[in-house]
Length: 281
Ligand code: PAF
Image 1 (cartoon, rainbow, N blue to C red):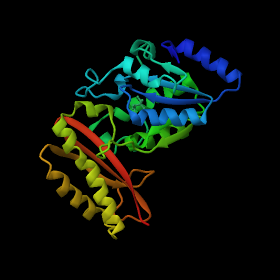
Image 2: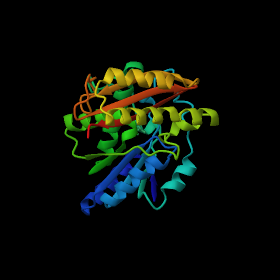
Image 3: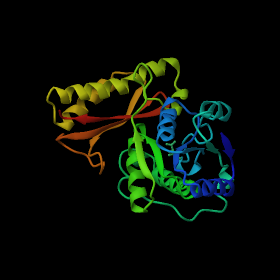
Image 4: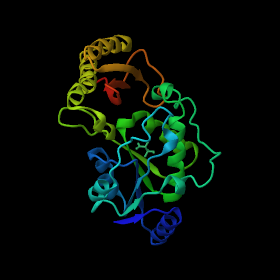
């Protein structure tokens, strides 16, 4: 695995790979890797000649009161986990990625203002902008994202289509701990007790799936049941529970064929998100 820190070196390597007809699979990350990230890297390896992984903690997607400074970092461990899976590891510094004061930002309208966008102002603009920059540097044939960040995946698919990026966008299922907790780099913030209590998110998703399987279609009713269920966990504070259309992310009142259920819940001081697709069979 080759480690590259500079944009110009990465561009040269990519150029020479392309000249030789190699396809490039790209997995953008912020590091502190877990099995969720590795599932993306393995899939990228299966579908492409060369896999590029980036590790870049993007300041532009953190709000002023968010955890940019404390975001977990362990480059040595990440490098070890990627050996044998990844061909090129791109780890640019903030200075390399933001060489001058940026005046250009991508705004994916409407999709960025809903759900997490209500409390995380500017977050999805930061995400879309950095991913567009990375696409321009890496020039991937395919890019891999996790369904865990369902809204991010929808925003980025829209951005890639609107700006005519040619990369195929692949979204992979949520990877979970044995008890159902969705894997996330931020789980490291949870105490053992909070980690056990955080399972309430997964349990809530499952209970909604059961309600739909048993014939419930009224989203208000389902959401109310989940509010009551999650509120029984002392360390949990609900940010939102919403059932929306998978593409537009607009709320739906009745589940027709399928709908996306998303949760954002603070467990202690850690904000967790999770989601599932509710399907009518
Ligand atoms: O999902 C993430 O880790 C980040 O939002 C991403 C896509 C790497 C952009 O910084």
